[in-house]
Amino acid sequence: MTMSPPSQPSPPSPPSQSAPPFTSPHGTAWLRSPVGLGKATAVLLGVVIAADLFGIWADITMYDVTGALADGDIGEGVQRRADRADSLYSAAGYAQTITLVAAVVVYLIWFLRVRVNAEVFNPFGHSKARGWAGWGWFVPVVNLWFPRRVMLDIWDASTPTGTRGSHGLVNAWWTLWIVGLIANRAGFTEYRKAETALELHDATSKVMFADVVDIAAAVLAILVVLRLTRMQNETALRGPALMTSTPRHT
Image (tube, rainbow, N blue to C red; front, side, top):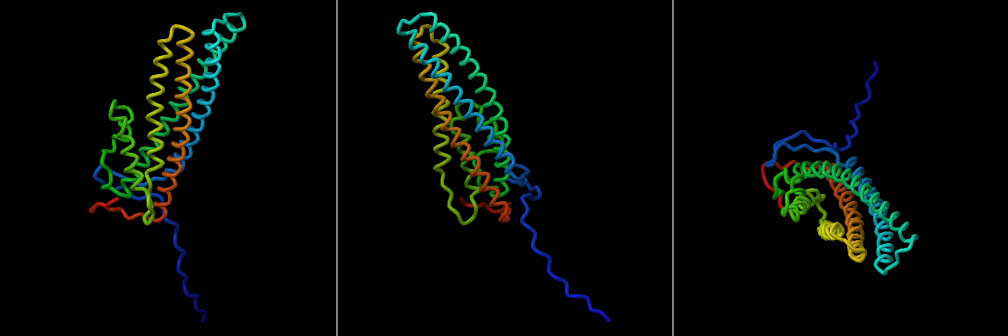
């Protein structure tokens, strides 16, 4: 007679990054990994930075040639430089627009993903409706503060239990984003209205400043995306408790 060996307990399964959907105060919420979208967003923001660097090169080229023209240099060599600067400026504008549009599309998809995840972590910690995660970027006036508020709510809900989340990185990114938004609008408005070489020279300096701020804002945006993605991944792996009846204070 042979005896079967005692059964061994099965090893614990790693925590899942998905959870069944449930109804939160903002609608049906479900947990999905933000890692792939977070990496894609960071890469595209890096491409935006590359396009902005190209834009700064075009800015410097235009700044130099308009400065020469404003000083009265109208020789054949300067005219050739002006034609080259104009072509370079146009190419940089197209590159910046295309890369920005691509990054915005993927960023908004990621932003909605992390917002829904945050509702799973803390259904009661969001002061704005889910729709503002998208529309908040485009509605005039409220786009100056709604996205930041939505981001802070997501940040707080996603901070792993037992750790203290700081808003410093988010606030720094948002400040540069607003400064860049205003500087871009002012610089390009002045550039379009410029009629003399001196006016173009001055307008180009403002566009260059806006491009520098855009790069700094994009760098901080990458850090925000990567850190928030990591926080949500860590919180999901720890097996967050779904709180559907009592609020969690943050």
